[in-house]
Amino acid sequence: MNLGRVKGTVVSTNKAEKLHGLKLLIVKPIDIETWQEKGGLIVAIDAVGAGEGEVVMLVGGSSSRQTAVTENKPVDQSIVAIIDSVDVNGRRIFEKFNQES
Image (cartoon, rainbow, N blue to C red):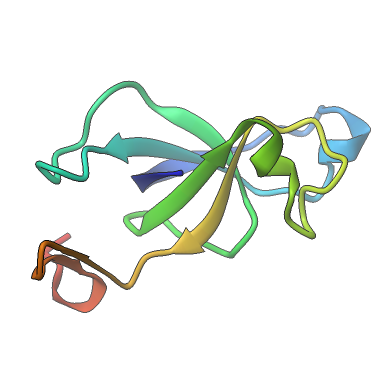
């Protein structure tokens, strides 16, 4: 599992039948130790109703097909949670309602 910030959306009118009705979001991974965005952008299926700017939990591979939304679908990355807060070593490093975005 990884954390990332939703940066945008992907719209596709022509896609595999099993992907019809699924929302595609663009996510930038976050380094949990530095809380900095890192790496390239990822396209993920949204299984929880996330929106732009939110910090989310991503799963990949076979785990990405374990939600009610993605079961038996051809997906490799899924958003499975919207993060409210993150505590590391007794210190809060992220809180959704106190972010400046």
